[in-house]
Structure formats: structure tokens, C-alpha cells
Image (cartoon, rainbow, N blue to C red):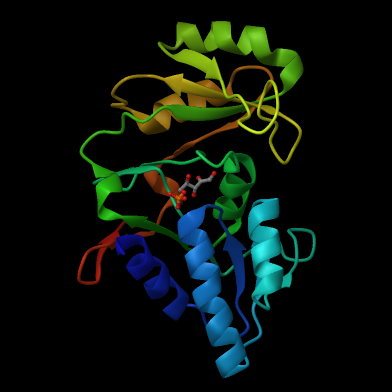
Length: 223
Ligand SMILES: O=C(CO)[C@H](O)[C@H](O)COP(=O)(O)O
């Protein structure tokens, strides 16, 4: 499986004593399970700041000492998945609804590594952009996003009635902007809307390396 190849390669890069940012999603889950095997076999001590309850629980299960950005203001490395990546290393993230904390741990890290399978690489980003919004700001945020050329849809929960609520108690809007020619500019414009906490555009300035899983191994894109 392609994503397993990228996750395993990232797990090999972790060194004893590192403090890492932990993204979220199914590829990160494979990464954590692989890292867990190394922690057990090689008796490594790894500290981690998880970006969601999902990765928090997986980190604990795999022997990572969970910590936070109060204890450490800088992380050695951050490993995370993505929903789309262009050849310049701009990414869209947030299908799992964890984008706010994911962007915080990415910014706190000295190096950010994205792990994906090859189907996620595109010429120009065009995936819907998740935007985490304070519920009180919902209607105004939809209107302001329209002015930026986006059609916003409230993400609904498939397990209960109504809105999907993030780990931080907020709404997620999934926004169709069509082709995104200026990811960095759009990222900033969305974040200027009152009540928006963060959005899923992770521009290339945040990303150092993308490990793309292929059928036979990996291909590495560097910034
Ligand atoms: O951004 C994310 C969660 O908020 C995930 O990293 C992204 O959705 C990729 O997930 P997966 O590895 O399951 O395809």
C-alpha cells in the first residue's frame, strides 16, 4: 500500500530523544504504529504533541510520552498527512477536521514532513478547503467567504444530527474555491475573516519535505 510506504519511511527518520508534532488521519495512524514498534524494540524515548484526540490516543498506545507546547515551545519534527499536495509543496489538509491544531504543531516544528500516497499529488490545488469557524460567526463567515469566491458548506456529522463539532468545539466549513492559483494569498485572506480560527491551506513556507508513497517505495519532494 502506497501510504504505508510513506508512513514507514517517516517512522525511520525519528531519532531517540526527539520531541515531535503528530498530525492526524489514517496515514499518521500507520506512522504511529510503525514508530511504536521501534520504540519497543530499540527502547527509544520519544515525546509528542498530538493534534487531535485520535492521535493523542494512538500516541499513548504506541509508547510516546504526550506533552504540549507549554512544556516545549519548539518541536524537532512534525509528521502529518494531507488531502492534496501540489508540485510546489503547497497542501490542503483538514478532511479529518484537525487542521487548527495541525497548523499549530507544524508552525512549532523545525521541520515538517508530509506523508501521502501518489494519488494526492496534483498540478494545481482544487480540493475543498476546510475552514474552522467559531459557531457564533457562522453566517457572516459564509458571506465573507463568498466575497473571496468560495462556496461554503457546513460539514455535518455522520454520527449525530447537525454540525460536525471539532475537538476545539467549533464548526467546519468545506469551501469550494475551484482551482487555487495563489494558495498563500488565499490562506491569509480567509484567516482575516472574524471568527475564523484557521483554514486547511498549508502553504509551502510551512512544509520542508513531502514523502510520496509509490508502489515500490517512496519519492521525496523537498522545499
Ligand atoms: O488533515 C488531516 C486531518 O485533519 C489528514 O492529515 C488528512 O485528511 C489526510 O488523511 P489521510 O491520511 O487519512 O488520508
